[in-house]
Length: 105
Image (cartoon, rainbow, N blue to C red; front, side, top):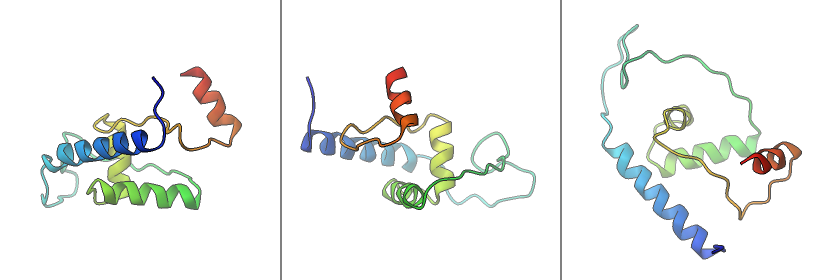
């Protein structure tokens, strides 16, 4: 059964609320000590990402909606598979690369 418009918005809202609940259970407020991990059992690694201004704004908005402190924390949560990312069929993908990705899924 295909979902359209409001159904996708309701599902996206439910997913965001579930992510907020998961993230709220994570420890906050630990003091950062050089060379010691803060939230996980490992030190962070520097990573340089290049995105469009629209992509950067979108990451910032998603991080704020989920109650995360930064885009970096959002990317870390995705990498740790705390947050799962899936394509939004309501948004037109306008690059060949994204079309290739969808056809492989």
